[in-house]
Length: 227
Figure (cartoon, rainbow, N blue to C red):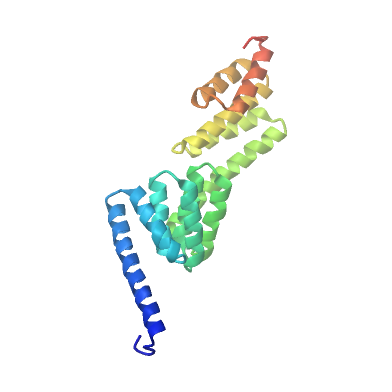
């Protein structure tokens, strides 16, 4: 305004100042909503701000936190991936993305993201700790699947039992392990055990197609045709 006080310039500058004030007001409201744990309201306010301030990494990280609290992990990942690109050496974003993938049961993507964190900082304590956990779990699952391909069902069962010990806190891994154990028992013609384990899975997930098929195979072995 001071350097070029023509009418057009002044109008444009005043518009931008007004918009800036409005965005700052929305930002204060969003922070307040977040602190009061009203995550839905915070997301709505942050949506408005990010429509203008597209490249603000910190606002994206804040919205990602709200999405996590609201149980929308895929939306949180989208914001965190943007934040990882927008801010140099954003180890925190890579760590959070890796953790979300891990909680969702996607150990391969989790491993890939935590490696990105360690590329930026090989001494990052949280990332290194998560990396060790995911790498161990990933290796066990890969080994178990290799045993299944080779028809070594006893070895695969043993390996999937190790998976459940490695990660007892995140239920999705135990469910997946039991589903694969049910498959191995059925393939190995251990019908009684297969029916028991497959039934456990189907109590948790009544529409689990793999468990239904494997239990059906086990029923056939026992001549239980109606079942």
